[in-house]
Image: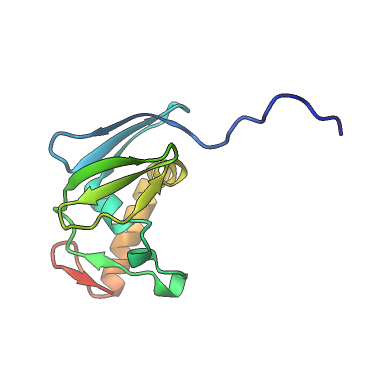
Length: 132
């Protein structure tokens, strides 16, 4: 197969705007593929890609309750591939890549429903702190 001098286009959607909404309860993200998402602080917090929540396998993954009213306290760039989001509950170890943020936007409703199902299955709720 002949090679060309042109590099393949990246399949990773690139954010063209990331804005913390004034009430700090959501993050507005627009991507270069035309998609725009409003991701709630609660969803971002409970799906944090941190090892603390995700563990190192599916069996180690934790579900965290009591985050209905969590707010975003900081959004910091991590190189040119991600952001680190700090929350007012002092969690700030998750690194959210562009792919991960885009996936959260595309699957926001299903991810949130899965979270609600996990809470119910583990006897947790959105208003009472807990981790299982």
